[in-house]
Image 1 (cartoon, rainbow, N blue to C red):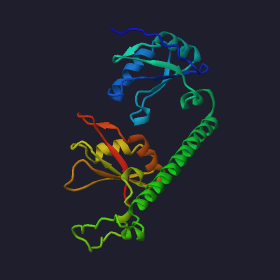
Image 2: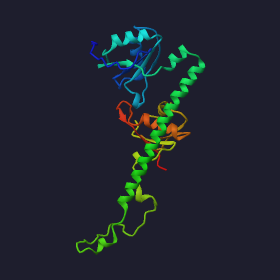
Image 3: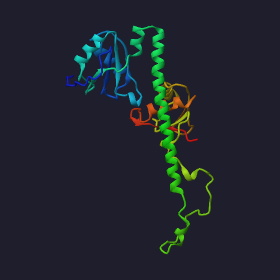
Image 4: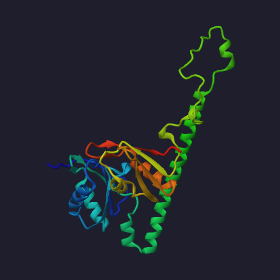
Length: 266
């Protein structure tokens, strides 16, 4: 039986769009949208409903009404309402939705709104890319320091112990970069992602439905004879960065396998 909990966390000024969080993340998006539509349509005309599957947007949704009064009624009545055994937490959205701008303005205003939103998103991607490159550089430098030889006078010390020859001593690595291997998590961004720990039954179509939503998607490549891994290529780094940020750690399949998404090692 659904119950009402007490949540007074409304902090944003009234608008026609209701922001919902604390939703059950394991419910399929279509099922979640149907449930939300059934609940919120009781309070007014719902002109749009946005719920996404990417990691950062999971457990959240936006319900767009055709008038602010409907949003006010919904927040007052639905705040704390339990959906799939979790109390929903509601607030007004911080910005107007595309559907609201389109309804209240004209085509030019809608395009301006979209460009501004995409520009803000692009700035976040650039900042994220810069931070990842910085982390990759710091990790490489740390690896180099670990591989530096001991000072020459260390062997002359009276307390120095003889060094035991290791197996394969005298053999040189054929990999010139073996001395400073950067961990996968700190590889610098590039346009190809390496996806691991996928459910064995996931094919090209399944992965395309996930990764094809991001800008500049080019293709998914499976590895013959190897299950659970794939490569995803984009036209530019920006698309790969956005995809990695949104899908890393996503639970997939009946077993909810947590995927690992990194940039391809160059």
